[in-house]
Image (cartoon, rainbow, N blue to C red; front, side, top):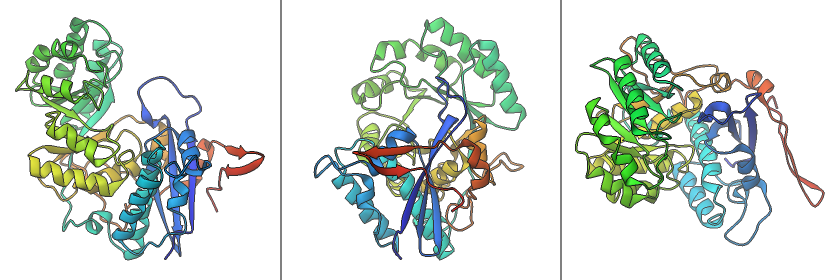
Length: 393
């Protein structure tokens, strides 16, 4: 079968704020070939990504992503790999290309799985899928008391692990952060797992990050995530050597497999976190998962949006029994919840299960998405090169 149509849908909440919450909007991808259809989600600025898909060619290595995908054969995983290689080469100077490809690649796997009647995790080589322990991923409260209340609420919902990030953390004095960290530990209890996400707040400033290490060790933090920008490998390595009790985590900013491997080999991270909506999709994330196993590093998904993205993010390490912890957005915006009619909910043991239905196992709720649809028209020299497609077509 051939890839006949690729539709991009920009959906958003009525009001977008500056909070570090990526579930406020989304770019959904629908791919059709023959009688089959698949869905994916890009972790990217929707309008910029649409432009990267349809925009005019700038030069030979800056072509729109569309040119490497539409009309291509789709018979198996080799075809998806070839498409990804062509996008990487033909759009190497189009920096948004990996984000756009990510959603398309997810949708191709979803489509292929539905066509073959197999879940994606089987298509990529796993014999079985193991349950994962979700950590309730949320933003820090504006105050220590608000953080305490948020973490307690998560524990009351049965989550054994939490992650706090962004918000005021790292923006003020180390003492202010200490109050937040102690609140997180108090709310989670002595037996709970507490992860901390600095959101790259210190750039490459090792000393600023080091100032927080004593209290992170005191509360028994499981990891410190993204203290620095993704490419600040020397800073990661130095900080990793200053604390043997708190492992570093990072990788959501990796746009290709090599960036992720460098964080492992040269940055000293103990947890490599990959977003399938950024790195190019499911197959490259699986390569990173395999590499993590070889290097004794724990693979973790990065997901802070919908359950469609959550399902995709679980596929690359579904078959890794020892890589057990996974990110789970606990308070996404309503848009993110409405993207799918079904959701991946914790079971009685507090674990979530990778879907065993064909493809990604998620049902996109096109009717519910109508109210979030952002109408876009892009014209070049008077000619329309993109217009928001119909969700119900």
